[in-house]
Length: 92
Image (cartoon, rainbow, N blue to C red; front, top):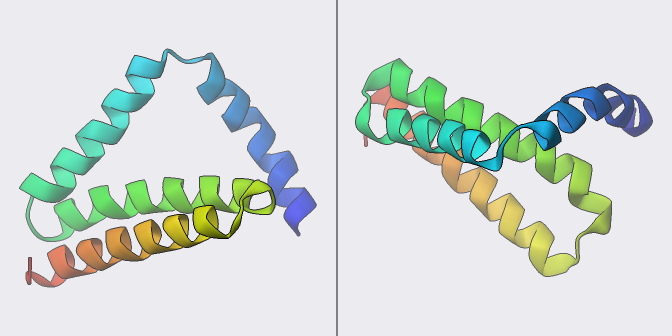
């Protein structure tokens, strides 16, 4: 399964690598702003898209990471997903 995901991910990763870094940073920033400023499901959707991207990159990089890198990515993904769920139910 991992090999299939890596093959599927090759084209999007190359496409993102060719994009200007400012554009990718702007997309991440916009999703984060939508998640923090928006309300309800709109905010949750922005944060969940960001969490999905983070999870995808974490999955691709997992074998090359040391323990601290894995823990950091797992914590970041958990916190981001928690914020998204809290925004969805109106608690945050």
